[in-house]
Length: 271
Image (cartoon, rainbow, N blue to C red; front, side):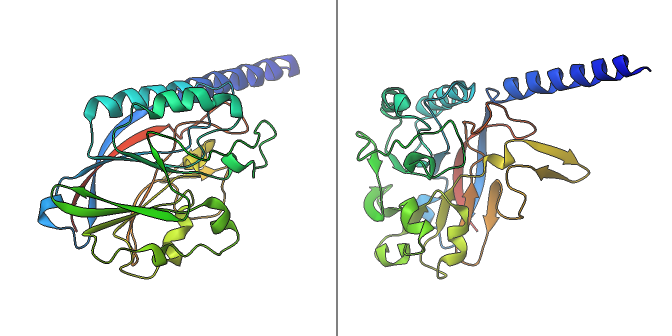
């Protein structure tokens, strides 16, 4: 093959990859996942928690389609609780649509992420913090205790700035009378900072499952986050059960590759 043929083949392959990445950004997976939780009361067996993350609304991306499809799905399933683990906006112009979507989520609690405060290397992002998100409850180093199925359930949320500066102390928010304690934090690494027994379930996002990945053998090379860690799915750790959402939106580039967006419904079960 001559040089022109090689260039043409490479250009064709690059075009196909871009087309696929654009498609995959809007190809949301809607998933129900059994989640083992230590010390779960029998009354809360099968409790359904929808976990969404990383909307990144306000920039052109098929990720917005994934967010809308995910909200449709969650609203139709009417789970017991909805938790959103940060990075709601990439630009302030997405706020109106965010509020319209969140208003459809039942019993919803959310935290902010680094993009909401403009702390990102993404050149297209802008600072867009929210002070409230009614009718959803926005938590920033605070907690709420509610009743579900006759049992007390506590939802605590970490402000991303407290996490950055290592001053977050979510264990100090613990309601010892709560039968189930849930911590929502944008960063999954928070689970390694918790004392055992403080929370039963930790919900995080941030990593987009790598967003742009290269599958190989039994794993993936995650180009956005090369360091090993909690990329997606369930992890049973000494401190708590951790669920890391692959998220719904995109950053830097409006593509995903071998890292589909996902909305997850966790069905709690005794560990």
